[in-house]
Length: 180
Image (cartoon, rainbow, N blue to C red; front, side, top):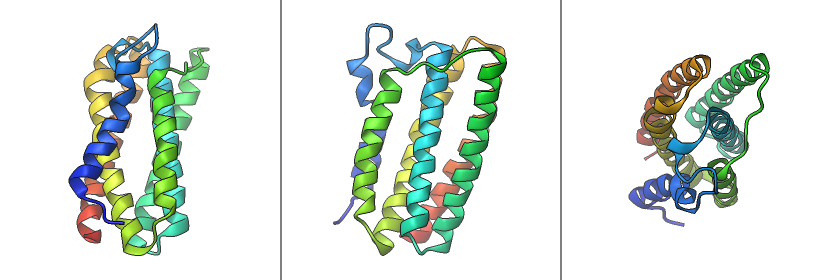
């Protein structure tokens, strides 16, 4: 299975946003989500990346892929724990929404596709997916979520998380070069 980088990146970015046009009655764009819906999207995106990382650990034999996957698991779990602690402190529950549902639905397709790959083909796909995923999610967080979060503590958590995930994006870009 040959995968063209530009098509992969386009497809991954598009999958993040394809549900936007099909929004529900409360929100039809990421900017319209409330703080609790935004929190759910972030938590969902973190869990999806953790799932991709576990898949990489199970399939890849590349030490660079393993190192990156372990970093994804550690960092995304840490951010999720902070988010859950903050929600508990605020006595709030994250709210499922059109975007978190779209992320989950489309991640299932990607997991199915990745699970069929092996060797260098898997490594290349995983690395390119991680780069495209972090670019898309970081753009969403920076441009749609942070400017619209109302609670100062939630906004601070998102800003701190964005710095971590921008570092992931840089690490993913280096990983893509290694597996070419």
